[in-house]
Image (cartoon, rainbow, N blue to C red; front, side):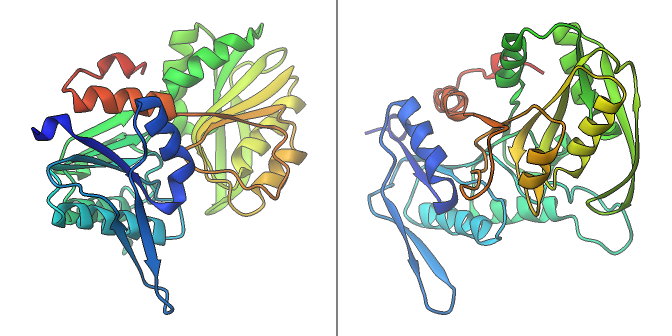
Length: 314
């Protein structure tokens, strides 16, 4: 059989819940694989079926711990050594993306190092969603399919049917994204200006734009500690906003993020399933929108050498 007629999906342990949905939406079963754990902490992934001559899609988000990234690297290596025709790394959440430049002396550029590691492992292509910085695509020496979650979030916002809608950027870095949403939705935009006391700690914050009497939707690529969006929401409600929601692709939600969201003025937080939510905390304000169908559609187009430009809403 010609290699182009064979496609198989596999997953690392961290993203099995999503990989199963992607494979289901594609119309195939998830490939069989397992991981052997050794007593010293090492582990060894293996495929339990032949991948010789196949186009192999390995699905794994690389959120902490670093084992998730290393498991992906080992699976790529195993597929190449098992004579896979092509190996595509599907990384819904690309971890280490915030380390995309030297923002102070004597620091690493982690995103570039991760790209080097993936290329060294033998990937032929990368598929990812809402990178923290677009220029990370250039860190790879293989094609990168950068998918935007806006194709999911824009219909969601429209279905809310909110009057006096405004979209907001939680910081100056998110202005480009928010401006794109503003143009498509035909709504005013607000920019939050903040100063950081140190990493993950917000100092002063103010809003640039009209907030009073508006239903505000804050847009971001990820929510980590939730310090920025919850402070922004509280500040906007104090300035007379009718309601404040947040939309972010990647729910990193570290530390006390869940508690902050639960106690904040936010009436809702919409995220995707690129990272699984915890099950032992209050998630009543959090709505999850699955990316499985979107990634399955992109995968089908990539596999059949079709254009994916129609999936780029912004």
